[in-house]
Length: 398
Ligand SMILES: [Zn+2]
Picture 1 (cartoon, rainbow, N blue to C red):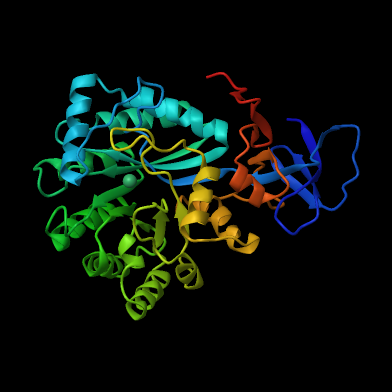
Picture 2 (picture 1 turned 120 degrees about the vertical axis):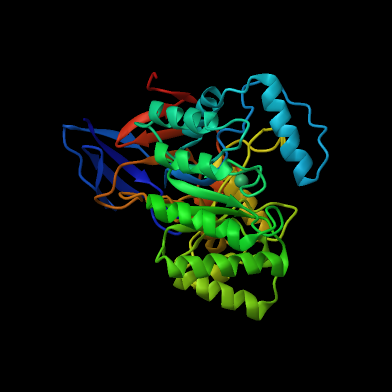
């Protein structure tokens, strides 16, 4: 494996350019000046920024219609209609979750993402077909990207008999997390729903990642039940609440109390920073040690035409939603698409530090803030010191 010295490249705003030496796939040294020797290739980093490979902590690889004919969306906007429409579309159009996951994974690779946690639908119509498709795609691309799977009862866990058994089988197949959805408002029995979800996680020794769209105090009640179960089962660090809009809606004293307990139980939050909903209080949660990571959620599917899979774009959406303007504030956005995601996914060896794996993205930008707002299309992506993307294409053939 070649040794490479990146000369004079920016790492974070406010810092002077650094030299970064990569040896045998590992970041061997970061310093203001590193002398070059004959055995080391040199890359001029001037005018460029090096960022850790991005992490999408909340995706749905099996929903995307990426690369297919354009989907003309005329779907009613209530949740049951959207879910029913998606089931019907799949049944009529021969949806192939392996093909669609693979298409999306290639987009993620091109834009510099190195890890994705994907919720994958499990229901009594599609069975485990989507789980199997996404897992197969994860195996195909395993040398370039880490894909985690969450078995996700999109159509409800309690209201469709047989779903729990399917999820149990999904976990036996090697799913990484047990999913759930709106235990009060959607499944209308929060205690039973969460007992089943946490019970499965305990049985298989895995974590939980719960979709929680419930508003205000109803959602906060579900959050309390999640905290209670995390504490009782000693699952600290293994539980994520996705969306958690309610955390941005309850009154301040209750919000602080929940943030404190989430921090104590090391429960993580994944947010998409949607334009139309409240968002979890990012800085308050961070101050309590809660990791808040970012995700794209669905990308160009029957739910909506939005999304590109680009985590730099998602970081900008966070900045806009949270009204971050200062460079220092936008460090939160960078953290959400990098370090926080690495904690949620339990990625060891992550980050631009000596001794860590040489997994990074290089873009033309003055600093990381410009990278977030300009989202340069041309990205050089490295995995274990090897360049895998340049000039907008994958260098490694599948
Ligand atoms: Zn989702």
